[in-house]
Length: 177
Image (tube, rainbow, N blue to C red; front, side):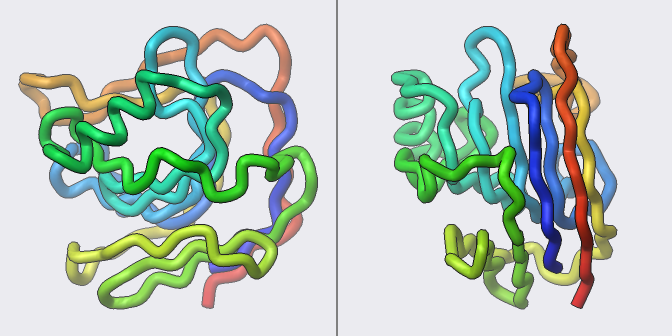
């Protein structure tokens, strides 16, 4: 997949592009995408990431956070403890300007997924889920998601954010290979 995109406005919520098998049930959920997450409060994933399943590689972190660094360490020791695995505590392209046009590429192979921005590889994340049917997805909204411990439904829950200014996701093109 390749897309030329720019994200303007620094909104609260999420935005992203990539592939998703369209389920919010925690265990079978398989997003493979670039994802922007920004929330008020103590939400640890405040930044722009490459994501495969519950594995996150930071590309940009919106602020230095001891919470993120601690979550990163704990997630590698015991991914089940916080529900995700943060592969690194260091962002790959901290100076990337999301409001500028960039070409994003996702190369999904049998055992790994590679992520590129403007032909620079920013992440290679292991993939072990086997064959998954997924669709291309591009979105911007006002919610981030969390898996709550002991949730009876075992689904990712919306954490809705209020936005008092507009945010925009501009899509120039999308190619599926």
